[in-house]
Length: 194
Image (cartoon, rainbow, N blue to C red):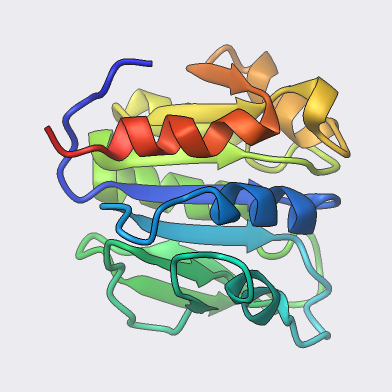
């Protein structure tokens, strides 16, 4: 995979069912000095407190914390979208949290995260669609591509649940369909400084 020059890339990894394993496998394989900010999102019941950041932080070389409203996205860090809130990326590359409420769409919404990332980071945005049910993320990957970003989807053979990555692939906007264990290497290559 060719290295593309990016300034301050932001990677958003979105998932649903099967996301804990998928997110953990990708994050464990990334170096601590990755020159990109990362956002991890997994659908969750908005009434439950998520422990996803704590779980991922146990094995990831990068520090993993819950996303905080107003926090700056910094290279070499991972923030996790909290349950009960949609996680958005602002034009100044900070996090904005918006209460999700009790009704669908999926919560937190991959589409909302990816669309705001596309608008704020343009060609410096990288979307990764991992295991999950439903089609959340499909509209978001279209926005990422339309505004010059890069899209990766886990292949169906290595996804615990295939409908989220399949919906992304079906848009025709995915640049790389990769086995789950090849995604970290792709992110390293895509975010490498020349």
